[in-house]
Length: 268
Image 1: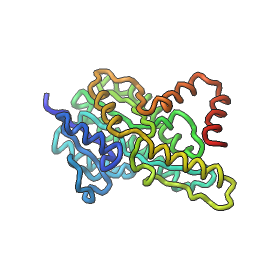
Image 2: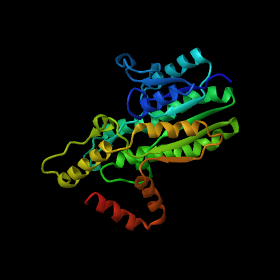
Image 3: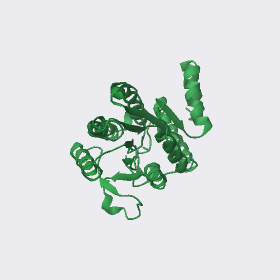
Image 4: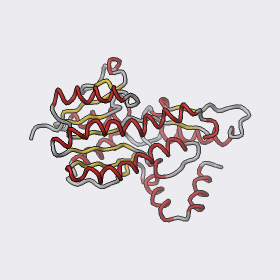
């Protein structure tokens, strides 16, 4: 069989770029996407123009790739954006933008590639979610919700498309050392706000976690392993042991005890 054709959304920086660079060395035909590919001059693989918030942009990018390669073997739905803040102080338009980027956009990308995968009688879709999507984290409510929703969409859709030999899985990263902190929306830390002290501390903690996060190459290696797994699992978690263990604790601990543990961590 010829080289697999891989499409990675949000591949101009961060985890997406690390995945693309790694897979580009493994005998795959890698294509990434970016909202502004003309501004990227150091990508070792081609970048297609795609904004996951724009359905026509998605259709155009997928059609361009299919015209060129005639198939798409693997979609890595990686494009996403962070958001932080007290829910009470996050503007509605920023909440909508986050869901458009982290949930509705990935859904539209999947809808765009599925007809081709069904026609070629096979394919793999990997949705990059987040360990934060397994729990409601203070001051990350919108991010947790959008990523958690994508986890559930994946669970449902993978059953719908199994008869067509299309596999879908989630890969949930923990904190990785990327530029996500600079690109995410921060609700302003308002002087005199009821949340000034608690949100200020949490914001500082979140930034420290990202700065001290794992190397994105770890995520790239995990994605490579999933691609080479004949029958992928529903969920994969990639990150520091304690972050992955937090999911186990949520499953086994009573809700209020787990909540207290999180509140202690964030000094609430």
